[in-house]
Length: 115
Length: 391
Image (tube, each protein chain N blue to C red):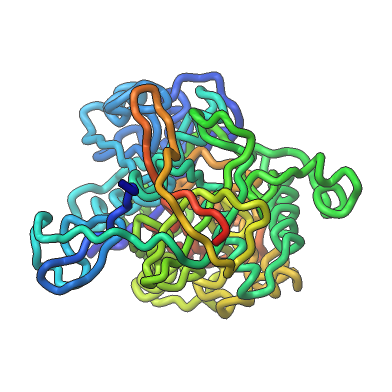
């Protein structure tokens, strides 16, 4: 089964959230359990990006590509990039992979490649 | 609401300091107490971001109160990321303005060099959104880099403009004995020469080494007092005349227009409104240039220049000493250094120094009004202060 990253849709007013909010930013009415999860789309276009050379502890790689992607439903997310020469506006597609390893935990997030 | 005045200021050298955290805070505080001529205070606010994590110390304000023999004054630490300093000043302002307290000590302190560079970078990165930013390995330089790339694309800012901010501020620090970086730099050396890529490598493209502030230890302190107390102490009458604070989305990617810094805009607007000043009336400013791109963007958002024209004003020298609105004449975060909790207080320290006419080689002639902008998170928590000299 393909892994997903979820957006949160308010059951009262339909506002979509990513990241999750305890209180809806649209209607400011609901409680935290009144959201439906909706998988985020995995395709979109690259809005901006960087290659980081000075990484935090835990990263045993020389450089890390990061970018903000505008997904096809108009929502945005940050993800890691595995793209040789990124360009603003290029089409990208994502898959959910391990993006950070700590001693006892693996963290999953979106990794984008050129579409 | 009562008027609030700055009666005393103090600072330590910003650099790598081999002293305990409390001593760094206390040293700056002692200078401020001495400068104001007070030995007792009603209240102490200590601004600090990393003591529990980086220095393995909690309840910092209690330790500072005792170290300075200021017992039984009230004391509390304020952690508000890189905007801790100005947030603590806000707390001090409210204490005096409300009439609850007459004399308040506000100290900002950070000792980040106790850990190595990788741990310091990770510590600062913990302010990012845990589930949608931090897990990806985002750092503050990475945020600034993605922001810079958008700014370049949209407004025609170039790597040369960024380098110009770095050269301006790092060289300005040569006129400030307390500043961390005491080494002059040139565009030739960091951008144009064949050695530039070695001298000035990328840390997060398109930002290079000299686009980022150093990791520093240091402390800064100010004494806030009521009008009656200020008159009694007889120091120059510098009034903290305006204060604004605003927040923005935690996850940077959520912002509708990613090149806007709405919290900066709102904080500045509120500070101007409260003080009755307009951007044109500010004589000297301290902006939060943790990264060179931020000085350009903030100079627009606080209203000095129209959006997208900050880099043009920079080119014309309008933000340098002697220009229309001198920015970061004491080096800014880039040259003075950025001990995160201390920075907001150090900015106020610089403005008060300027309004007192004590800036020596970096003095802005006849400065009567000043502004500080303390930028927390990546623009998600911003405090703007204005100061006015009254004679």
